[in-house]
Amino acid sequence: MLKTNFNNFPKGKPFTEILGDFLGYGIFNVDGELWRMQRKLASHAFSTISLREFVMSTSEEEVENQLLPLLESLAEASKVVDLQDLLRRLAFNMICKVKKWLGVGSEKRLKDAVEEVHACVEIIRDKKKKIDESGENCGQDLLSRLILAGHDEEVRRDMAISFILAGRDTTSAAMTWLFWLLPCHPVIEQELLKEIKNMEERRLDYESLKRLKLLKVSLCESMRLYPPVAWDSKHALVDDTLPDGTLVQAGG
Image (cartoon, rainbow, N blue to C red; front, side, top):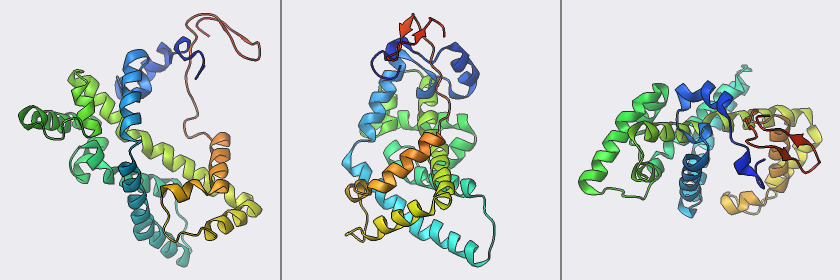
């Protein structure tokens, strides 16, 4: 469904109609060529070494200067906190910091654009005007690539909104469930702390994070048990047979 016969399993109208008013032509609500084009643009933008380094430094800055001091003050005061809300704000702050890779202007404008969703149109218009007049950032950032793909304003808006929203709730949900599960499994929690403390580098980077194998499997298991995106709609265009022999009829 997701690999060998992907083209036979689009999202289907029941899904796209439910979210159509909000997500429109964004990557989460389309199939076919529009999906492939946005997937290609995103893969290129988020696979660059420079972006990885920027995300790492931004994450470290937000965690050390904002999240940890806040958690310490809450612990000292014995206060209860909504962890998912806290992590959602952390994830959104990090997305704001990655604004220069999207080419969408200041953090405040990005925040306002998400809160009022379709106000994103004005940011895209400004960007397109700059490109038309001077060729600024021509093709170098994600928003420029979306604009230069040649789609109309509504499609560009929906694409940009989807990319802006993509990492916030999914990231915070994944982290929330991980932090909820760890105290339920104290042996794993202690082993994970030991793995982190045994890291040779005091300053984590992208490559050193990949060597935290227990952290990776803990995250993967947490997301298996509690998927950040719990529903992935798929409908068969024609009859198909799954690897285990299960027959899937068209429309099912």
